Length: 215
Ligand code: GAR
Image (cartoon, rainbow, N blue to C red):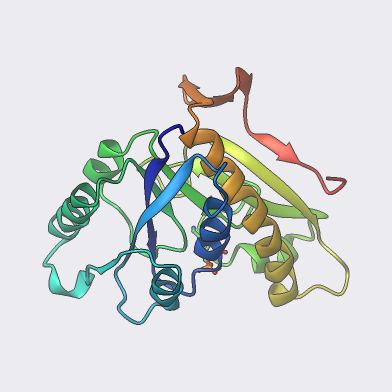
């Protein structure tokens, strides 16, 4: 059997994306294995999801560190000790230092609830509604030091409906996040992603691959 790539998931909250990753990695054909779930928040429900799945957990509380550099160094130690080779950010609400991001260059994924480069940052759904866009969605990308930037792997579109509010739109987007995050992790873990001039190529085809509403 081929070796599965050890993955660490960083989160701060409920962890529905973690759950999608856990469920996908439960398949013996998925090339990644989650070996650690790490949170800055001891109360994150995502930690409970990990325990239920028999996955090791760790808490590194940012409040116990005087600055970002020492906090990120603590994260790095825990990840290295667990043998992590790919990091997945899944609702991790801390800004990471450039040094940490560079240490995981092309080995760290993030999921963001918009069709990047549109709507970086927070409140993506409300901002999309305010702009009256017809299409919204989500993106999985390799992480760079600038907020919500980096070579994009997969995107999924959702329609914006006339009756939507931020909550209904977020629910529809989240559903698709749970499809594309495990798929993007699978691509990266199986070595099918190559980055050239800050473009991610999937099996030689420049990304991002866009999953349309049709499928
Ligand atoms: C997800 O919607 C994810 O896209 C978003 O946080 C949520 C976490 O939900 N991430 C960002 O906004 C990152 N910029 P979850 O804890 O249920 O997976």
